Amino acid sequence: MGTRKGYDLELKEINDRVETMGKQVLLAIDRTIIALEKMDVVAANAIMKNDALIDAMETDIEERCIQIVVKEQPIASDWRRLASYMRMISDLERIADNCSDIAIYIKKLASLKTVTPPAHLGEAFSSMRQMVADMVEAFHNEDLQLAEKVVKADDVIDDLFEKNVQEIRDAIKADTDAIEQYLDYLFIDKYVERMADHVTAVASWISFITKGELNIMFTDRYARESKDDPQ
Image (cartoon, rainbow, N blue to C red; front, side):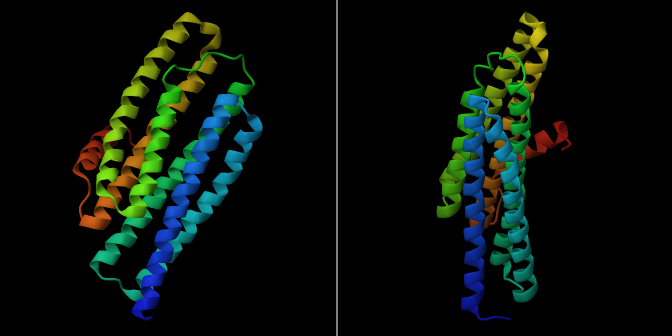
């Protein structure tokens, strides 16, 4: 085993890398929002290419967590932190994947006749983006109140998702020649909703790190949604 000082430095290094990964995911979201607004194919390709960087960050952090467990046999509180990191980076990586998924639909939409996007899609994207920003700040400061705010904000995204779905239904009925475009927007809307779920999961692990318990609001929601969505 190494010295306690070296062990603490390793833990801090992992912590910093998780935070950096969160910031990279936030940057990917910002780029996705802009690419969608402008229907920018070049930007969409860059988003998809950048996903490999976030995948590599996940792998690096995961390996570091495993190595410190094997070498140092951490105490319960540190083990709780390391286990939380590994769950967090999985959700962060999924958010980045969803940005790439949306980029694919941006490229498709850019090649089709332009239609008006769902009225609340921009609001949903912006609200989800704020959840990620708050989550990164809550993680940095171990701020439980802010983490709980993130969990509660998921309800806003769910409401906006349903509003967008209804608007897409109405738009398809009114313009059957644009079904493909509206279905693409429906998938994008669903990805935004799923991204918010992943952010909620990350925020809940902040509570587990600091208090040793998961946010009850999150665990109840996760149990309900797991029944509806096997993925």
